[in-house]
Image (cartoon, rainbow, N blue to C red; front, side, top):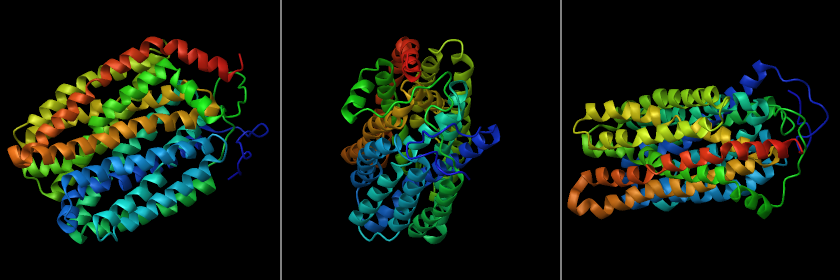
Length: 440
């Protein structure tokens, strides 16, 4: 494969990119994202055996799966994204993959809760190098008219990764113990890092944007942050995604424990019954949502955010039905459409954020979104549920988790209003970004 265009990714006219190669890059980065979420979420299926082995509380595990990971993931993501807007994105992704895979393997050596927390912090720092540079790179391989679909395919890695972590992790833990799970899934990511570094080609930033693209040097940090905060559509999108993620990450972290405590499922059973719909229906939902947004958004860009608003409005009643279901069967009947509809906003959200900024700010915009989303969603969602579990345990016992998850679902329901508000200013803000990209 050809080397980097140059340090900035802005060299002389690059060779044309074939559609086949573009989809190869998309497929490879998709698999990187799968490993990202396998290594991140496999902890959720292992909460019960880890608690039994290490003797830690629900509050501790809620903090570990949420806030401790999110804190370092998000704060590391900002400087890494600044670097990704200047330097080789493929190298940053490959190095991050090596770090988070290695630290996942090290998690299996933990002898105390503190040991496990330190290893998971390492996973968070490594994973911060994954999504922002990948979003920026894919936005150069796919133009605006195909970007929502491409980023939806990339985002399917979340659901396939969670499914693989739940199903594979549940089975491996039953057969060999939770420590082996971390070793196997961690070391499996190392060969993939080699492929990323040696076969993905860097492109000039803005390569697939229409018209003559004006090269912009990344602005100083606080100037960049200021410009993002002044972008009304972007602010509403980030806030909406944060609320939706509070519920989404809460269910990913505590869904297996919920089914074990409330519905009496076994560990391996939960891995397959939860993992399979997450992988198939979550993946299908995120793809369909991106395709639908590209179809309707071409004529009226407001639909890129109107559709997520409608989808998130439908999630809330499905979430309540899932939580209050009185049998395993009914819980899973409601969980399937919940996860399909709940995933549909992801692709339009990511592609719209990329379209709202100039190419030299795309990794930073992605990181700023992830910073807010993960601090509020990934950080607070699992932690709030864990805290409420312990606080309500004396009154409700094991079913306290049902009411904890209800609180998270209510908080997440506000995302629909915020997505709709973002659609009102979206055409103007997208045009402003296009004019700036072309130097007008």
